[in-house]
Length: 75
Image (cartoon, rainbow, N blue to C red):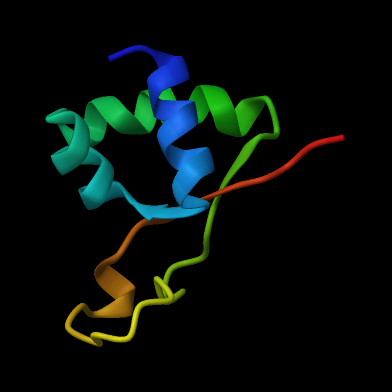
């Protein structure tokens, strides 16, 4: 996986949980955090505050345990 694959997936999803990225790309979450940090430092991605809901309606996950990231469209 390369950074552009990660970018394209997150842009398509708009908001994604770290655990979902880890499963999709079969990569350790800690390794993904480093890659996500590159997009955060460029201003294209932001980590959402703890407790933010994913937007789904299943309510099976504890919002405090979900690490969410959101793509930011820059001009």
